[in-house]
Image (cartoon, rainbow, N blue to C red; front, side, top):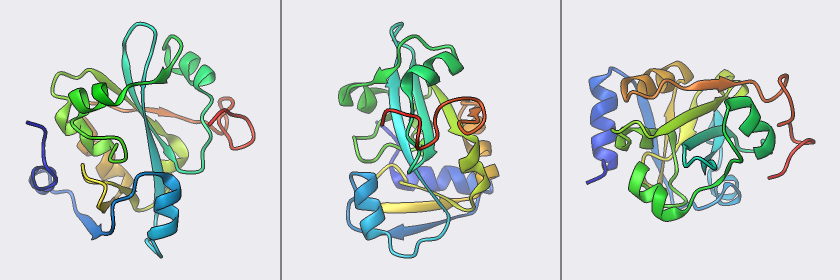
Length: 175
């Protein structure tokens, strides 16, 4: 059974990580989030569950307005032809459904199948906001605590600078 939001909150508490969670109607897209989040402060992100030609899995977590060039990202992280993974694989490996994809889902990848890639610019925003395994809430967390949580789940994140290392800025990419 995948972790529930309550399991996630217990794990964060056990790690001594402070968070703040806000309830809201279910959100399925970045556009939904922008429309309904109100004045929720901090960095807002999108999460791309990807696979490559060798069936390696990746979770790219980037600022919500970042356009991601998958061809460039493939080269940057040593993947082969990244593409979006199917919803069934997302649910199998990360235990969440489309619309609820989040770095917190690393709690469900106990086999370590997913490589986590974080946008360097995102880590300068505080707090960062993600769904806590369900898309009817948003949980705010400090960037350093997000990294600490990921490491505690066995997912040492790869930090990628989309702004200075190549295409990835809003003017240079495929959605």
